Image (cartoon, rainbow, N blue to C red; front, side, top):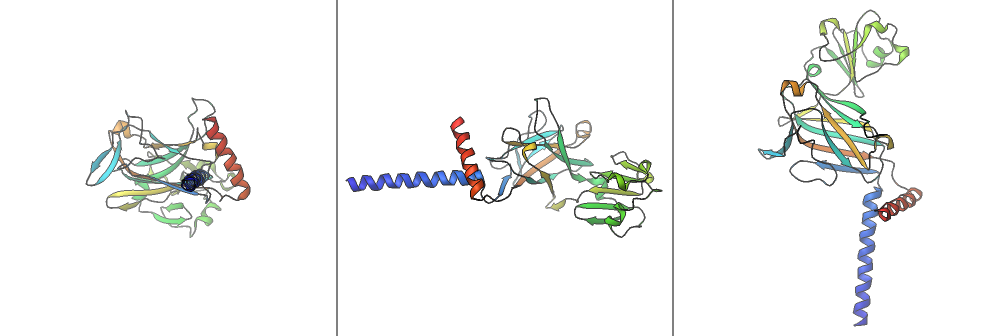
Length: 280
């Protein structure tokens, strides 16, 4: 009987240590990569539903696809993270039949409750997608030319024309590159293309799969973006509310990256994890 009790105790200890090791591994993300998904058909432990309720619909299911509709912008979602990461790759699968511009923002760390500061990335721009100008793409930067003059984006940004108008969108030139500031303007949906010769933007058109658009954008996601162990995102489409349009969100994928953990950082991470647990 004593032998059975001893074996039972040893087994309990082994199970406890295995479970504790698994928890530590999950929370310290030893490999440096955490991939989480929200498909709206199932609850996610990491990614929230879209909110607030007065701007979005409940979860719907249609032809096997689950989604939420945004009908008042902006809408938000949160991502719970077990520790700090350096980068975040965010993939959004959506349908946007009517709106010209669709963008995603990551909120910076709040210093006080009224802070509302976002870093924005472009998800979709129908005007750019349908533009029939000559197009160059290099490393996530796109240059449209009404009349082809440049063979590379590098050539263009190092010789920004002084006698033609350039519109920028999600792109900034260095101060040294602009020799005639009156010829460089920020693009917006009301920009008249007949008065623009070049458009440059940090943008890749979304892919289309079975009628759904799929776009991936990247953010820096260090401590300056952490809010109580959450990353907070905003989905925005200017004019959505006034136009009475709707955008469907079917799936959100988040890939979080940081340097892999070594022995020194693992001990520090373990210490921090234990302190957080004791404080709860």
